[in-house]
Amino acid sequence: MKQIKFIMMLLISLILLATRCENEDCHKAIAFANKSSRDVYVYHSGYGNHGIPDSSFFLPNLTSSDKIKSNETNSHAIAIRECLESWVKETKGRLNVFVLDAEVYETVPRDSIFRYRMVKTITPTLEDMQRSNWTITFTGE
Image 1 (cartoon, rainbow, N blue to C red):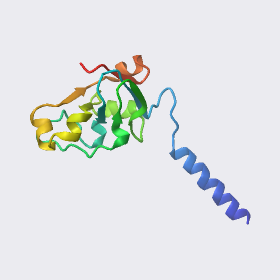
Image 2 (image 1 turned 60 degrees about the horizontal axis):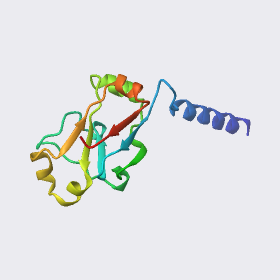
Image 3 (image 1 turned 45 degrees about the vertical axis):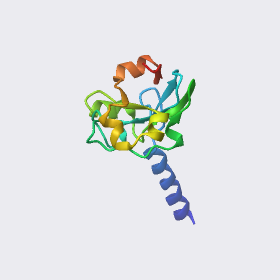
Image 4 (image 1 turned 90 degrees about the vertical axis):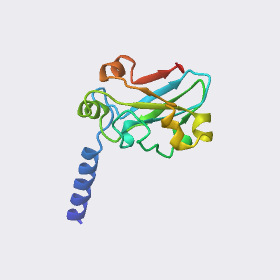
């Protein structure tokens, strides 16, 4: 019985160590404030695409959780499993955040979206994120 209890405590300790919590040196999410007059979809280069999108890139299937309504803020719009600080440093100091008008995404064929450059790209630096308290504010411009 003592061995089982010991093993359980050991497993719980290992799990707690493996799941690092967010703190001032480790952020796992960026808020996105949509201050534009249009609903938008937001995704980031963590979807497996570390470059600026063009017609050769795959547009992921975005869901309602990726959609941010006009004048709303999503506190976990951009979230990854590891620390964003480390991830941004590993990707040469930038995180690409892609913003797509919701009406365009819902009505225009996918192959046309990149061809006609309908995706806005925001590339905040780590310093930008720290200064803005880990929030991207989108005005539509």
